[in-house]
Length: 471
Image 1 (cartoon, rainbow, N blue to C red):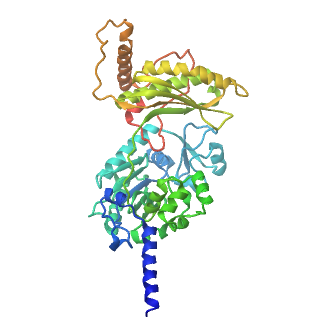
Image 2: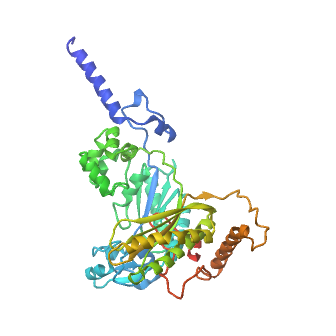
């Protein structure tokens, strides 16, 4: 015994040290999340990881709304496209169309080749927002909506009386049934339930359409090993290559690393956060704040010259300025950006603004940037051919408590009163467009030409307010 006892003691100490180093649960993160910090007595285990999140993903949302609105489309392969033209791409595909290998981003000409019976529905973004609002109202009948993640995804936090597997599954079924019964029978959804939001999102993607998948703590992380790294939000092609260079080719290899090593392979603190999340630990979310307001537009092939681009950019700037005022912000920086036909990279230029929400000040700044865009276009082979143009207002801040202008009482023709006058005019235009439609009044010149239609559209990750459809 005298020879074996020391070895046994040393081995146990080494195992404890190795496990402590491998687990490395950050005490600060756990305290912020309301969990007890692990001490030496419970270092061998993770903190409690109950089911905390229900993630709902509407199936083929835009196409399902179109099928709900038009019974003739139900049960048939349908794509939603900006216009009924072979040169554009599908922005959504119905469940039936997906069976032919058609997906978001498939060119319309290719989708038609894959499915001869394909039906094309022009996009109706205002309807998608209206259905989105109705779906949220129905979910609120069952559980508060914690996060609206996109136009077709929401996340809800489960309370202690809702987080047993049986109660959570029953709740999910009630929500799914309520949407079908009270919003539309074509609107099916897939639900994921898990200890944190990342895994709940992953679970919602595993059964489509109309699925329901639960991951409990005892299934993690090994229950995720069959998934690909690219299925995790935040891991794209570039990050996948970076991890591969460090010897991480799948989720198993990432989870088998120590948290610190996983973070090093990732290249920053997010790597070890991901390690904990994949093990089911819920971590505090990093606060986010909207710092820009902007719009972009892909120009039709016949409208890619300098003047149509300028007119489209002015319209985008007016939309952004109207949205800026409606949200109670002002901006200090204007960015004009675009992509030429012969270049995949972004061209961009910026100009400082006085802290403003005035359309006329913003348009004046935009006009000063166009000579730079024109010069860049002239250097291109074949002349000025811009495929996409965008206008973004940056360095935004709230205007709550803003003082009135000292010059507001001056004669309207006094130069010092100009911005006060033009801001009042900008707000008057907002009210007219809200009442009579977004094209009721605008700022010229149009020079008799027809600019590309610049209507409000759904952006991934951002749902426009219904007011935007009047801008």
